[in-house]
Length: 315
Image (cartoon, rainbow, N blue to C red; front, side, top):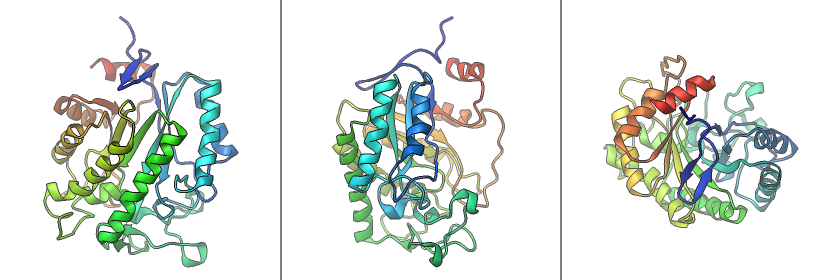
């Protein structure tokens, strides 16, 4: 029996040599959003290791959207130049395809580096004003975010558009929009974090509206031949929170709009989550999305062995 794990897969005009994807891993080592030697070595090593696709870490589409001051961004010419250096190495010395994950941390932004505690930055440490669908802090002691008004919503949308234009110039192979783990787009989706009473809150249709508008903005600019995917949390692991049934509807709406793949994770919305984490614990969510759509689906989460990964693909 031929291995699926080591077989190629086609996404629009892109042929990925195998099914092993290097996950977007935050490194907290950028300077004002700009990648440096650390990122060149970190990502470069994976380009030499036979992986099919490398996804660069959650990258803020605006400075205020970074999780921490050390997170990468794609909002300045300097950011773009730093990314270009990494892409040049990957393309010249390896066979992996390379993509970027667009992020906006929303109310989980303005955080300390993990090795400094990962909690909210203080004013003395350079904290900035965070934003969210509703003015609800992530946890006690965290900043109270500013609820996004019409002008701010338009600004965030424009930031995603500008990051897309920079990605076109950089010739990335793939874009993945981060709509998981309690970051801004997930904050709109989840009733735990979205308590708006306007067209962006309340019903599922309304809570999906802004994330879908962001997707439409990116898809309208991103070349037709290049794949665009979305990472989302399949559920919040919180009673009354974002659910798998709602996530299926979200995935179906994204597919109608030209989404090529789904990266299915879970959790991250709020500290009261109660995650049951076992080997491959999120693959059942990926399977549910696979049954409900015709798009390519990526499974993640405690997949640590090649035979385990092969079994997931075969089943």
